[in-house]
Length: 314
Image 1: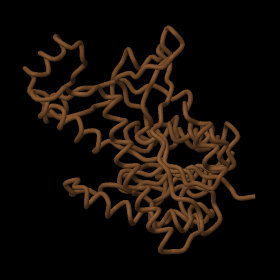
Image 2 (image 1 turned 30 degrees about the horizontal axis):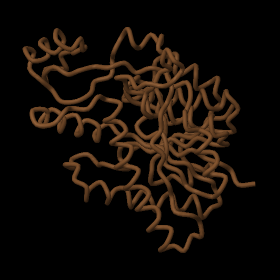
Image 3 (image 1 turned 90 degrees about the vertical axis):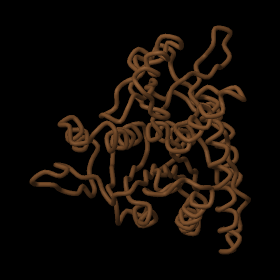
Image 4 (image 1 turned 90 degrees about the horizontal axis):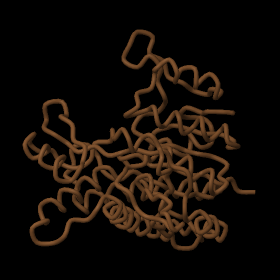
């Protein structure tokens, strides 16, 4: 039986450092990523893709600000949906073209604009910490805090920036659709950027909220909800490091969850970088996953097969 894997792509799969973020630049990066995904398909894996969207949503928010005098600005949940749509389009086109060139006989890839349920009472809503959007002056930031009840912080001397909650993902709303498509042979792109955060309304329906869900924790939630065997988190480093940039720095190869959690509790992994990735791997293997891997994009297949990256076992 083919193993089902959720592949969580880092930002370098779409946009490289130093690039402006043109459509051509992003498509070029996505095409390179598509070739790595094709290797997994050819090796017999059943692949579901998810990805980040930080720079893309940041761009959309800036476009909102610049255009607000002529057209209504959109809330963050709608901006997240926009980014899922255009990044999903890039991946679906690049993957389909790659599969055609390599004569891989599977259906055309498909993107699902994905909602992710969060808890309205999540403590994150009382303590917004995730910076989003452009920088502004202190005067403008304080005006917005007063008029819009937003939370803004001074960011390392670069200006003031809005912060929003980052609640924990509880459920992939479209999970049944993703599972059904995967079982029919489709490569599915889902839960981009952590998904669109929604809460249960008073009438039992769903409504979007101004928040950002961590993309790696959402990837783990997606993997669990679609009964994946493996979770592969791809980033720009080949392995997890302990004692990072300190004497005794060491790469982590194969490791049991309990040992990795001990390192996590000791503070080896920062919350803004490797921390959520490590937390996602721990959640996955402790909730029935066979194995979770953190590795670099250019070693994706080798990592999936166990010879590269950090291999996290139950």
